[in-house]
Image (cartoon, rainbow, N blue to C red; front, side):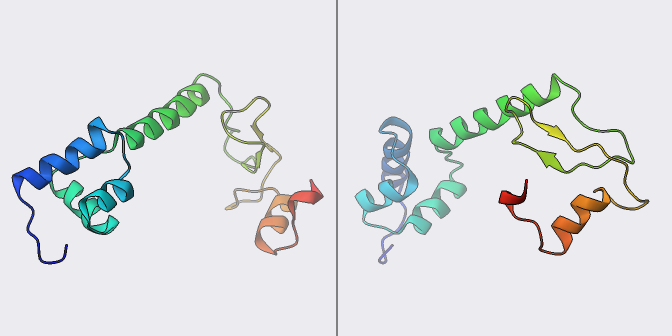
Length: 122
């Protein structure tokens, strides 16, 4: 912070830039003439959370809410290798039988643990 102290006025300005003006912490830091890390550190101490971060969390919650509405997880002893992307149409787990102590079937275990699998192979 170049030797400047955090004052209630500077805290208020940071809060204003982030909450009212919608700037991210890097942008707010430039306006204040400080580093992004200084802005993030101060934000943590004054419990300031970016509305953008809250929006991102809302999106994540929505995805998990959709996943909770459908029982997509295979039973114990079945492969949990994901086919597709969570929250999208057609997403599912492999579901093949697995060896004791493993979470993937033999084929998916081979692909994920030996570096032989590429996305183009599927």
